[in-house]
Image (cartoon, rainbow, N blue to C red; front, top):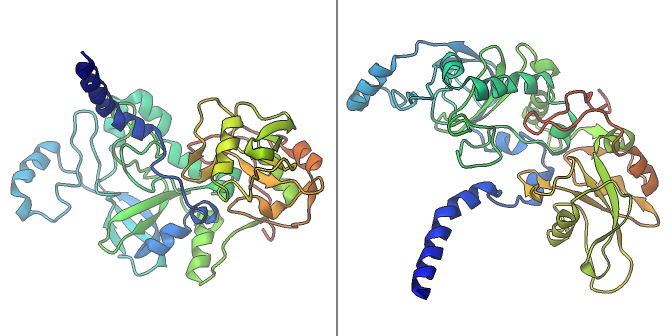
Length: 379
C-alpha cells in the first residue's frame, strides 16, 4: 500500500510539474536586465532592426498548404511551414516594407513571418474565437497609441513579444485554450522589428502609422544607432513617485522585515521579505542579524494582490529604498529612468506623493488608460 502511494504521488508530481512551471517565471532576471531600458538588449542582439509597414500578400488556401507539405523540396524554406492551418487558428500572409533602417541593412521588403509563422488571420479568428479575439486584437493599437511614453513602459518596461514560447506566462494572451498560439499583427500600424542573422523576426513592437517621430521607443533606437550608450530618459522625482500605487515603511532589523509605517501596502509582506533575499533587483536592500534599526521604504507600481508573484521579467514586485536620517535618495530606486535631481527627499514627502497619479495599471498595454505621459526633461 505504501509503495502504491509513492507511485501515485510520483505520477501526480510528473503530471502537474509542467503546469507549475508555466505558472512561475522562467528565471529571475539579472540586475542588468531590470535596469536596461526596453529594446536595448534586443537591439544589441539583433543583426538588423527597422521600422516597417505591413502589406497584405496572397495567402494560399489551407488545402494547398497541406498538399505542399508533401512537396517541401519544391517550395522556399518558409513555404508552407510558416502557414498556420488549424481548426481554430489560421494565418494570413503579409510582407514588410522597410521604412527606416535602425541597424544593419535590412532588405527593402521581406515576408512578415513573426517568430517562425505568419500572423493570425483577423477575419478567421473573429469567427472562431470572437470573445477572446475581440479583447486582444486591438492591444497593439492601444499600446502604440501610448507612444511608449507611459509610466509602466519607461519605468520597468519590456517588449511584448520577446519570445513566442507558448508556455511563457508573461507573453501576451493566446487564443488556443485561452491563449494565443501564434503572433498577431495589425495591418493598420507600423512596427519595429528585430531580425537575427538568419532573417528571423525575433521581436516586434507596434508603432502608430506614420508615428515613428513621436514614439519614444523609436527615438531610443535612433539614439543607439547614433552610438549613444546611455539612452535612459530623465524625470523629476515629483513626476515619477506619484505614479506608484502603494508605499510603506519596513523595519528590517534581524532580517525580519515588518511593517512599521505608511500603511498603504496590502498583502505584500511576503514580497518584501523575498526582495531582501535578492538584494539588488529591488534596490540596495541589505539586512543584518544585529538588532540595529534599518528602515526601508517599499514602493509598488501595481496594486497588491495576495497571489501576485514576487518577480517577473522586469524585476521585483516591490522596490526598496533605504531610509537614512528620515530621507530616501532617488538614485536608489531600481528603474529604467534617470531621476534628477538626486537630492535626498523626506520619506513623508514621497509617501504623500504616492498614489496621486491618475489611472489604474493596465498590465498588458504597459500603461494606464488615464495616465498622461511622464514629463521628461528636455522634451
